[in-house]
Image (cartoon, rainbow over all chains, first blue to last red; front, top):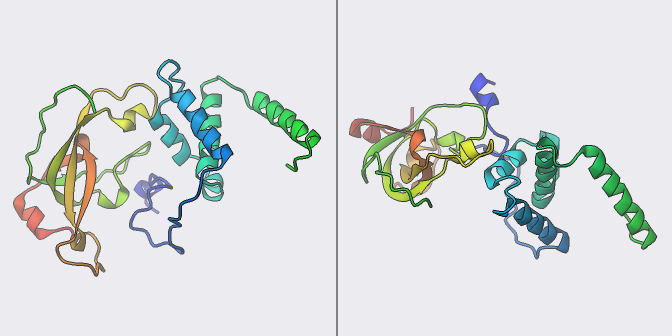
Length: 114
Length: 110
């Protein structure tokens, strides 16, 4: 691999041979996917401008390859939002972990498997 | 699209080469089209530079975005479609340099 080749983004795969065809089927958006989309719009909103759409895209494309390959479209969005919010000092990993733990307890109490 | 009026550097039909550059960072010009020769097909207006704004900020100054046409058969050695098939890529001004009609005629295959 040349030095230049190492700069090829993991998303930039046009013209490469792949093992499987791209899944182009559509699906009805789930509630959680709609919520991720809503959250993104709040973060982009002109009166907040926490980050812009290009920072978001860059954050998605530079996710570690194991995450990029194994998570779906909106899951990558959440990972990228988390990365940007932590990078900008707005949230800490500890705060996010504490909130996730709190939600898991709440779901468990409600009888939802997590 | 921006309200800034930017005079396009290239005319419709001008041969252009996509810069054969492979910098690190957030790049919007597809890898496979870099270094290839095509021709200007149209103007899409001027926009901020997303490669800059991806690092924060507004990505100003705005730059012209062009439709650039490439012959499919000149991009892929094993292309089996029609000879007249074209690929149109939206490219921003800073990724383009002038090419000669001879270079456009010669095509992109080795």
